[in-house]
Image (cartoon, rainbow, N blue to C red; front, side, top):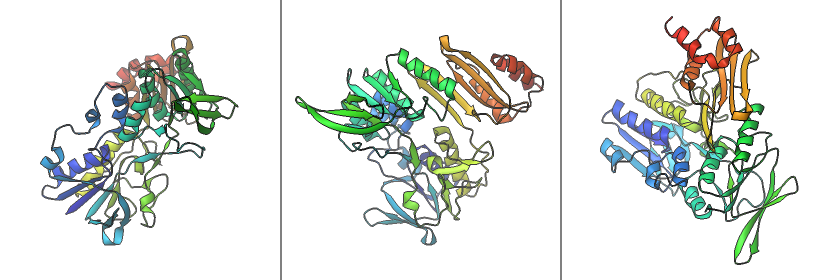
Amino acid sequence: MTYVVVGAGPAGVVAAETLVKTDPGSEVILVGDEDAPPYSRMAIPYYLTGNIEESGTYLRKSEGHYDALGIKYVQATVESVLPEAHELKLAGGGTQSYSKLLIATGASPIKPPVPGLDLPGVHHCWTLEDARKIIELAHEGAHVTLMGAGFIGCIILESLVARGVNLTVVEAEDRMVPRMMNQTAGGMIKDWCISKGINVLTSTRVTKVESRSEGDEDTLFVDLDNGDQIPAHLVVVAAGVKSNTGFLDGSGIEIEDGIRVDEHLQSSIADIYAAGDCAQGPDFSGGWSVHAIQPTSVDHGRIAALNMAGKETSYQGSLVMNVLDTAGLISTSFGQWQGVGGDYAEMVDKDNSKYLRLEFDGDRLVGSLSLGRTDHMGVIRGLIQTRTPLGEWKEKLMADPHRIMEAYVSHAYL
C-alpha cells in the first residue's frame, strides 16, 4: 500500500505519522513544496518577534524525525491529480502513483485587486520566506501599513507592534476581526489598539500603492478611499485566505469553499481524502465548513489517516473557535457566536476592556464572545460541545453571565 500525503503542514504531518503507526510496513510519502522542513504557520509570529529561531517553527524538532519513522519526505509541487490512474503529475514532468491519497494543501493568502501590490516592500505574512522579508523591513521606527484586521491580520499586528514599528491598520469592514467579533467587541478591540498607539482605520479601503524615490531610498505611499495617503517602508497584506484547490481542476473532485468531504474525510472520489484548510468538512453546528485553525487541521489529519488505513472513524464535526491576542487584549469566540435567533446575555465594561456575551438556543448554550478574560473558557466550550440543557441556570446566566462556572458545576455531577 502506498499512501501519499500532499501538504506538509500540521494536517499532513499528523496524517503521515498516523499512517505509519496504523499500517506498519506501508509506504508513506509526504510531499511539501516549500524550501524548509514542515513547519507551523501559527509559529511565524513568534519568529517575527524574535522569541524563537526559524527552526522553532518546525513541527518536529529532532533531526531525521521523518526518516526514523519511515516517512519519505519529498519536496515537489503537484500540478494535477489523475484519479483514474491513481497518479499525481508533478512540476517538472515527474509523476507519483498512490494507492490512497490525502490532500492537505492548506490555503493561500488572497491578493486584492489593488494596483501596486506587486511592488518591492509589499508582502503577505504567510510563509517563512514572507517572514524573512518582513524582518528585514520592519525595524524599530519603520512606518508599516497593515491591510486587513481579521484574525490573521491581528496576529500579525501583535508581532509588528512587538518590533516597535509605527503601525497603521486599514480594515474595509466597520470593525476589527469582523468574522470573529460583533460590532461591540470589534469596536472595543479597535479602541484598545488606539490606546496602545496604533492607528486603526475601519470602513476604509486601500485603493493604490505606489513607490517614489525619497532621497537615497524608495518609499511606498498607500492611497486610501478617504483621500488620505500614508507613507510606508513596508505594506503587509492580510486580506484573507482561500483553499489551495486550483491544481484539482479537471479531476472531478467536488469542490465548494474547499474540497467537500464526508464524515470519514473522504472526498467525492474513492481513495482520495482531504484535511485541514483545504477541506470543507462536517461542522459541529450541522453544516459543512472550512475551519482554518490548527486544532481542526490536526484532527482532520489523524481521522483521515485512520480511515485511509481501514480503521473506520467518524469525524464529529469541528467547533468554530478562535482565541486571539491583540496587543495584549485576549479575545475569544466559540460556536455560533452570531446567535441563532434565541436569547442572549451580555455584560459590557468598556472602561476596563472586558466583555462577555452568551448565545442560547432554548436552554442550551450555543455560542459565546469574550474580551479581556481567560478564565472559564474551557467551561464555556465544554457546555457548547456537550449541548448541556441548562434548565433553571439559563435564567441565572441571563441575569449574570459571569456565573458560568457555577452553571457548569451544577450540571457536572448530574
